[in-house]
Amino acid sequence: MLFFRFFWLFILFCVTLSAQTSKDFSDMLSDGQQVLFSQPQQSVKIAQHVIQNSESAPEIIQAHLLSGRAYYVTGEFEKMVTSTLEAKKLAEATKNVEQQLEINAFGIYALNLFGLDLAAEKYFEFTEAILTSEDKQTFTNYLQGGKALLLAHDLIEQENYTEALSRLSLAKGFFEKIPNLPLVNQTQILLTEVYAKALPPYTAFEQLNEVLGHADDAYPNDFQKMIVLHQLGEVHFIKKEYSQAIESLEQALFISKKLPNKRYRYAIVESLAINYMALEDSDNFYSFKETAAILSNEVETDEDNAVNSVFNYTNANHAGKRDLVASNHQRNLVIVAGVLLLILLTWGTLKVRYRYRTDQYQKFLDYFENREKRKEQNEEPKKEPSKSTNIPKETEQMLIEKLAQFENSVHFTKQDMSLALLASQFDTNTKYLSEVINTHKDKNFNSYINELRINYIIDKLKHNSTYLHYKISYLAEESGFSSHSSFATVFKSVTGIPPTVFIDLLNAQQHSSDSRKAYETV
Image (cartoon, rainbow, N blue to C red; front, top):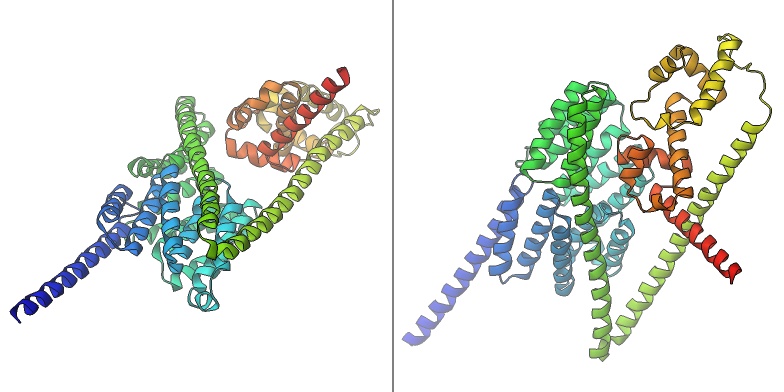
């Protein structure tokens, strides 16, 4: 009798100890969430401790996800992908629906960093497809928030920032209803990055300051402060308030080093370089450009490794499914159905990609066709300059001829080229020069210079195959642009397609031409 009493007391003690230990791990994870955006390294340590010591699958999954989020904050993308995918595999293995949805929602942010928006969309759709109707009703906020987030990323890619702002606000509202504070924070971060692009400078300035004032409401959020300060610097730059821009950017740079986050540090350093260039401070400009070049290589390497990790996981996942078919006959029909679904999804994806590629190729051809047409028009006999009414005819004719000489030079690739500088070189005033460009080139000065630069670098790409192997940042600098991003934006506006796609098509065209010549020689 005494033995049984001690036995039950021992069982009660073990249960109590287990419950207390579980509560301790839960509290640790909660602490990790609170310092996530201010001390991400501490969050990683907490997550690793829980992974090594907890026996609870949901806690281990949450710890892996916490690690992924912390590495997102520090900009260590390969580690972010590895941790998040580990959380995803465990959540799928334990069939924990809520954690699968939370991980996939975070995956939308993570995968879109590398342009893997299609993968993010497919992961989310596959998770939704296996949910029961009861699950869909229970976790509707996750589903609706994820869909709004996916659509927002598509709109950002299309540069429809106003509509993207609306969708991001909608997603944030759904995540607040759950509530899931990390997803709310990450959605607010995306909103912050869109304000300067979607809103007038004054409105963007007000919104950003409001976010900055509430950054620490839930818990310290240095990551959000860094992004807000960077965006405030961008708004100041747009308003030509260069000193204020530098002040905000320096504060953002300090936080980026503290976290540390090389990706945002690179973006901030680029912005600082541009502001110092505007102030004609060449020492600081070249110093920050040199730092940016180093950071760019490091970030690019880490991003490439992260993308490789995603593809390796996808391949391993498919291999695992094939092994499961061989070892578990009872689930053959389910797996075959999954494979068929995957084939259909792949076919649909390839079809969409083919249409997209065809559209890009048509724009590629249209660009060269339009250039040829413009050349033919320029070779036709010149008409008397008559469109301008406020400029003496002799002056107008002189400016037209000087512009023709300017277009045949490479002076437009100088980064400091401006309307005022060109006017002084032409011995005229900016008003006359601007009017002649608007009238005879059908565009303003900035569009005129940017188109000359893009046409110049495309000629280099077309006639010198070495240029096809250069980085986009080098092509941007070679053609006179101050940053990779501004070059890519202008390139797409002129040609209709991004520079990376254009180079791929040009490579394919030249390879096809070389193959045809080799065949004809044989």
